[in-house]
Image 1 (cartoon, rainbow, N blue to C red):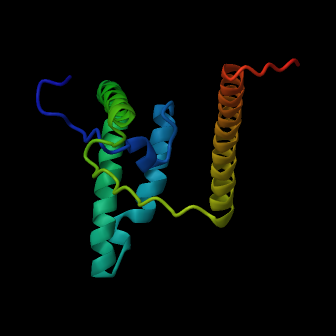
Image 2 (cartoon, helix red, strand yellow):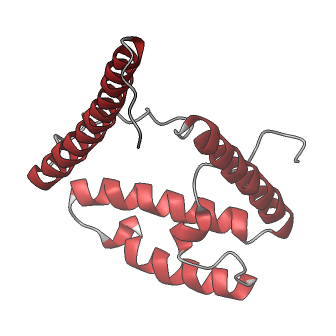
Length: 160
C-alpha cells in the first residue's frame, strides 16, 4: 500500500469506466482512454449543463487512466477490488444484503392462485378422508370386539 492516502476509489470499477477487460495491457488501456476522452472532453461541449456532466465524466476517465496505467498503483487497486468483492460476497451470503446498500423491503407474499387453492383443498380433503376412514375402521373393530365380548360373556360361542 502507498505511504500516503489511497490514490483511488475502490468502490469504482475503473475497468468498466474505460471499458477494458481486467487483463488489458497498458497499450489497450491507453487506447481506450484516448478514445473516450476525445468524445467526452469538456472543451468539445458547448451547453453549460452538458459541460458540467462532461467535466465529471472526464475526471472519472482521467482517474481510471491514472490508476490503471501505473503498474504499482494498478496492483494495489486490483488487491483492494478483490477484497471489496470478497467482502460484499460474504456479506450477501450471510446477511442477504450488500454493505452500503439498504436491505430490500420484503415483498408481501402473493395470494395463492386458483389452481393452487384447488390443489390444497383436494390434498386437505384427501388427508381428512384418510384420517376419518382409518378412525371409522378402528371404531368398527372396537365395536365388533365389544359385541363379541359381551356375547361371549353371556355364554354364546361363535365359530368362524
